[in-house]
Length: 95
Image 1 (cartoon, rainbow, N blue to C red):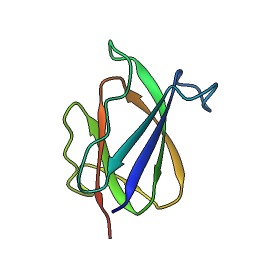
Image 2 (image 1 turned 45 degrees about the horizontal axis):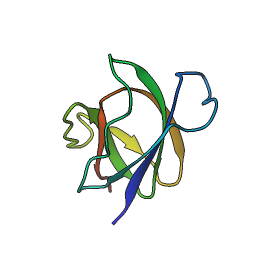
Image 3 (image 1 turned 120 degrees about the horizontal axis):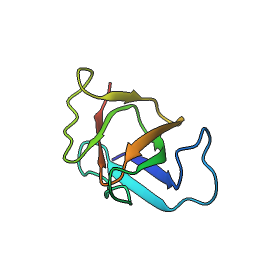
């Protein structure tokens, strides 16, 4: 089983600054990550890294179903997104 990993940084800068404040893991096709830390719709810079190709989505209670509502992630590539505090990350397999 493959995972999507998230590394959360304090500010929403062009590049992440400082030490990570949280680490997240979502099992592809199985479990959501923990919620991104913070409150009041604060946005955090989150680095996502997937062990396998997948579709990823985040929200208060997300369900990724594929191309129509999720973002494709490649395997072994870092990507950065600004994700609202309180949101969780989910992922499904992409073939």
